[in-house]
Image (cartoon, rainbow, N blue to C red):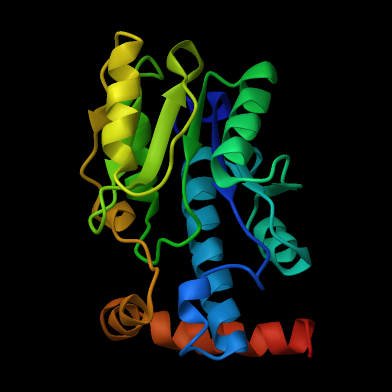
Length: 223
């Protein structure tokens, strides 16, 4: 069920082409398996956002034909990457959303194997009807695994190592406070082979879903 602020909020999920995504997994994980993991997680992220906010509120930015097919099948809109870096692309997509009438944007990465609709909803609620920034810190490196910015308190994102602290400081510079949300499904992002092994052992249905996605990918995009 959509929240009362659903039409005002746009979730933005930046993506790379599959050939460039998760390069840290290249050495140990076969290409089709790596790509299936990426698409599985993207599907989960988009469906969590769509469950809360409706299909028109989630935009996947960048990627390739495979990414577009999965994004649109899960209920998202897809847009070409407007810039040449993650932060520039995200900031451009955010500003487009504000120009189109959205009162807030929410960045979500596409690599959250534990994401749920409840997590997305908790970040939305923490913004207090889109009057203050809210976000979730990455448990591993102090990065940012969700960032909701109202149009009235927006600033350019600075994603990367320790970025949550930078976003908190940016909010303070415009005389507001970044609400830190405890959302377990958003705190863990899958980056390494060890993360993948953990997800296969501990995330319900992940291993089976990964095999299913690998078969789908092979059928739809054969080598």
